[in-house]
Each structure stands twice: as structure tokens, then as C-alpha cells.
Image (cartoon, rainbow, N blue to C red; front, side, top):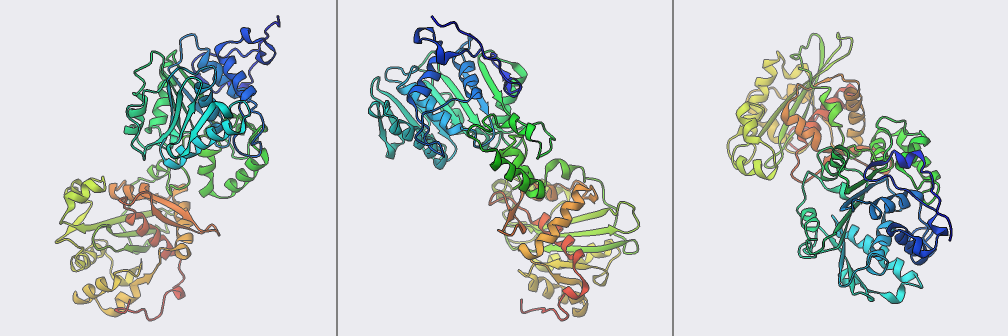
Length: 549
């Protein structure tokens, strides 16, 4: 009989173990079958019968990495019987392949049970299909498993013929979450779940009541925030240390250098095995040269809990700029504005900024103003999930009569706003997007504002890549240097957190919305104000059109 010996785990694996037993990995490949533990039999099944389903190693026999063995040991050899297991790793670390192997182990391998059901759940049909395809391909490519598994692609199911054990891939977009009674549930990419709860996850995680030992495994990169479902699940394991909950979290240190290759291993335990280090070097190099790519790299390649680069403004940086702005003073400040007009659903937004030339920090004082139609404000309060009624009552939003924005009303208040700051149209430049500007100018003319002064004040500023790229670069500089003072205006806060940055192939950038009902008009206007401050006098048309816009 071969004598078992134990393998020392490296530091990056040990530091990833947040709850559950410390795995005691043996030389199981050298042991006889009757000597193998439950976990070792699963490992042996994978390496002896499963095939890599995709990638450059597709078609080759599966070979488990040490971190995968450690996870399998912790799950299946836990003396307290694991009920929930978490494996959080960066992308391209063999996550989908591991899911496929575990699924097969439960329908035709050592964990198969008579007439049992196994499911993998994903938030999207596309992701669910990827998991099914990986499991199906692995079985089809294996000479040992091909005849033991029947695939039904239209249903995304695999049937283990020997014991009539079924695997099914389901998604939150489908209607099959209830009534499955799975012995094993694997949740894929739980980090994509926004918010603390998910009806889909609740349905599939409470469906295993038919078994005494149901098991749930979650494999994913981390969520964006502390308040998302997957983050709360991880934090519960770390804080309470339940003996039946395994949590292996591979993540780089929070503020590490993007180019620190030692840190990469902490989030990428497959690095140098089936994750290419040259690929990671190329991605890190791009991220180090582009702030817009840095957060994406941190989240997906370093597995850090951070809002992706799609979010234009990081919440913590924005909060550091919540100082109260001074009143605009034309004697000490350069004053500019941005105007983003709307008609029905969006906010009409005016943001005035004063760049303090006397202040050593060159503070940028921000004064935002918002309008929306009063009619249907209750409905929009619900659909946008924003407290418009409260903000109206507190004076953060002005409502205009009727179902559409009344530009006569806006024009009148615009004059009042300027006068409150001791300003007139000749004292500042206001960048505007062409849409609806003609209506506002007509309203200003009706209030006896001279046409020449209107034309002198208003300067066209688009919201496309050309105009917004330099504007957003400068605004980012103000935010990161904490020069901005926005006064913690809640409407502007909402707009800033709803805004994402989108790039063209040349890495130019503009703003867009995270969701259809998320308003970003305030931060658009702020960026336009900053962009207007960058324009040379000769950038503006000498005789701007007033009515033919």
C-alpha cells in the first residue's frame, strides 16, 4: 500500500481561505482507489474522465490546478458537511471548466445520485448557455463519458443515463427557477447581481428541500459594491465563520500597483498554468496608461470589489468634493455654465461654475439648478426610483406647470439666478447643446434680453466624443485633485452616480446612462460648463444662429 503524504499549500492559496477547513491535500494521484477520500474521488474522476471543453487546451485531458484541488477538498472533505461554498477568482482562471467538471461529477461521477437533479444558474441566458455548452462539450469530447451522457441542447439539459441524473442550465431571464429540487446548485457570475437580493437566486437556493444534504456552490468574480448580493455572501462567511460554509477569495490587495506581478497571483491562481501571463501584462500596461481602464482591470483581473470603469465618477472621490461652494464672484472668478435642456422625461439642467483665480487651490465652485414638469411627477418618482417629490419640496428641483418643460418659466428663473449671483449674460459663457435651445432663446427675447447679449453668452457645446473628451478629462482632474466643491447637492449626486463613460476605438469618451431611467443631465451640464471654460474665444461662432437651430 502506498503511504499517503501531504502537500504544503503556497501562501497565495492559504491567504485566499476565508472560511471552512484548511484543506489537507495528499498525493492522491499515487494512491489506490480504496484509499481515496470523497474529495479525492471527485478529483480523480475529473482528471481520469473529463476533457477540457474550450480554449487552447480544448480536447486535452483535464488537469486540476492546485487551487482547484484545494477548493474541492474543502467542499467535499469538510467534516462539518459543506452546505454552501464560494470560489471568487479573477476572469480566465478556468471557472467555466471547473463548473462543467463538477456538474459531470454529480450526474455520472462519484457524486451522482439516483433520479437527482443538478442545476447551474446564471443571470443571463447567454451565460447560462456558456456553462451548458462547456459541460456538454466536455462530455462529448470524452471517450469515457460520451456514451453515458445524453444532451438536449434546446432544453439546456444533460442526462446521466446510469442513474437518471439530470443537469439543467437556467437563467434569471427564463421561468424555470422554481420546483427544481436540486441536490447541487452552482451559481455562475453572482457578482453581476445588483443589490442585496435577487428573486431568481432566492428561488434556486431554496429549492433543494427534497434532500438532506443539498449543496450550493457560487463561482464568480467579485461584485462592485459592499451592498451587492455576492459581497454580502462573502462578508457573512468572513465575519461569522460558519463551519459548513467554504469561502475561497482570491483578490489582490486594495491599493496595489497595477503592474505588481506578485499581486496578480493573489487574484489569478491559474497564472502561468492556463492563464497567460503575457495577456495579463498587456492588459495591465493598457490599464496603467488609462484611468478609464484601471478600474475594469482591478475588478476583473485583480478581483477587487470596485465599481468598473464604466462608472464615470467613483463615489468615494465624488464625496471628497462635497464642500460648500462660494457664491459666484465675477471679480475673483472665471464663470462658465453648461445647459442641458429637456422636454418631458429628462431633467432640464443648468450648472454654473466659478473657477477661483485668487484661491491657491483654484477651487471650482459648482451651482446646479434643475427643472422638470410638475405633471406626472409622482409617476416619475416611482419609475426613476428617485425622490423627485421630496427634492421639489426641499427646493432642489423647480417644477414647471404642465406635462412638458415650460421654457418661459425656465428663462425667467435663469435671469433671477444670474441676478442672485450679481451676474448678467455679458459676464459669463454658457455651453449649450443644440436641442431645444431655440425655444429658450425665444423666451429670453420675450423677457427683453438683448439678442446680442444672448449670442455673446451662449456657446455651442456638443455631447459627443469631440467636445466631451477634453471636458471630461479636465473634470476628472478637478475631481481627483479635490478642487471641485459641489455642496453635496442630491440631484447632482444622483446624476453623477448614474453616469457611465463610453469610449470609441480611439479612446475618446462621452457620457451615457447606466439604465434607461437613470438621469445624468446634471453631470452632462457640469461637464459642458468645464468644457466651455476650455474653449478659446475664437472657438465660438462669431454670429451664432438664434432661431434656425
